[in-house]
Image (cartoon, rainbow, N blue to C red; front, side, top):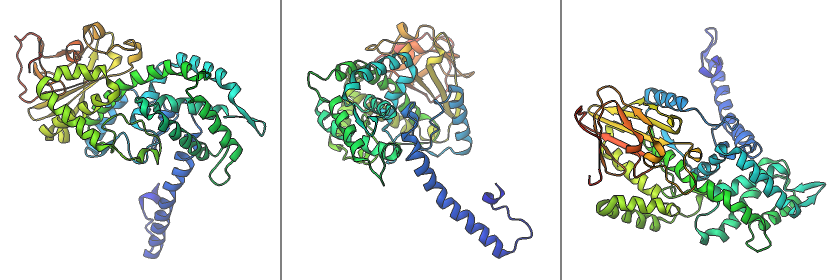
Length: 440
């Protein structure tokens, strides 16, 4: 460690110090590339237990972090690295951010995932070729492929033909990166062509393909809950300590894979049209628009709407989000494990962020995690002296609480699945009753 810190021994002359420095600098030059080729571009395509974890800078063997660790991370960041970039997708991510939030759903339903997996393997076993005594694809490659399909399956039917070609190109890159059954320097043409044939059969929409009808029920389920995972991830990124980065194209659902797939042209005209519509609907009928985009999440407008509203709040309360402190909020009630909540405070301005999690155990597919029928008595405890008057920056609604130390989730998450509450005066009023004013 002393070597890397350049803590030179006292007896060294300047020439020795220069050699020491040269050695450390050369070692640093090699460490990054070696890490990239050995781990990010090899191991992350072999260790396929849950491929949403196989990301640049991640630890695939670790299944996420606890809520307590999440708060601890943010408290450390606000203390030491408050302006570090927060990116959920970049030019170098292995999978788009919304691909990962879909695949993460599998960690909530392991028994169901295993059941589907066994069914698919049985259905597709006759489609495998034997190359060099090995069935193609090998079990690990097949397992990787099914997760990929669940994560990247398009929401727009018109994109399906392109999706098939993208998957074929991607799976060849993936198995070459893994360097197990083929590789960049010594490609196994027989293995690769057999794998492509297997993929083509899986995604063929012919009547004799049993796989797609067996695949779509879980795909629909993963896609549905993945939407809420994505919304929670988005609001946390935009409000946690740090500077949020939105990679080009991720204003809508980002179902891209590793480069060059994530560098395809972005339809900015479409995004401009959506943004114009969002601005208009916010002014004319925001609650009606929220109801509409909740019913049609496949358009991606719901994600863009959230990003727009959260960025407006960041602009209006610049110091609050750039310099404000961070405090975890205690969640109480039977569903406390399904909520992440924290506050940011600067001067008289306070923000409260609420994001649901682990929703497969909470709502049925097709239901929204909103209102009293879902959240019942779950509530968050506010810091002493908190205001009773809050405005939800996402829905533009005003909340007035009956107690200055409690906010009921059922009243906050009435119209939208995540919340960003703002109070800029720090007022308290012990005589107020809880009111949701849908006109403000």
